[in-house]
Image (cartoon, rainbow, N blue to C red):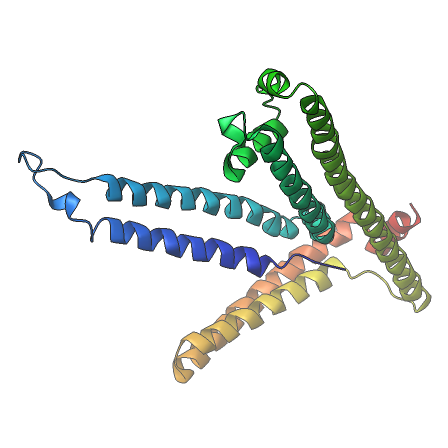
Length: 288
């Protein structure tokens, strides 16, 4: 199974950002047009400055596309939203084949349009111009149909019908089919993982009940939490401060935490005694 490497997307964004930064630095330091006096009658050529500035903005647009794709990477950290990342990761290989098929079919139609309409319509005389016109047709901007029918009454309907059916309906349907199939696969996989995790929790709970396990009381829970906090604070202070000072401060912290533990446990035991035994409540909850 093919999975998307998010490091590739990170390198894509980083390389384009570095390129855009270098172009901007060169634009504002190399070209002498920025230092020219606008009050003089001497001709100043601002075309290189505008050209490279526009190139930097175009690269920034590509960076925005990569940054948008990185949103799916961080959705993996949110429970329930990782399905988006899984769907695109699983469908990446199939989407690649769809893109290759689209490129081959599009290249064939570009050559066909140039051969049929290139001698009569200037916008189809070169492959680049023909590819732009066909790309606009794919984006539902079909404004040249009357001109095509007037120049080639026999071949224009055949070309338009085959182009719309193969490039518009077939490719878009294949794209949606790949995404829907990937979503179905990942949905079934996630449901199976949830069922297995739930079954494992139930089996562990039954095993603990058979061994005579009981849920911890409030005193035990509070004691374990305070001991954990004290150990973490002692370790952090011993690492950050010199050894002598760290030992003195950690011992002082331990004494204060111990007194806090005794007071907290006394109050917790009073609340637990007033609220009744915890084991019965847990048994009722487990039965429900």
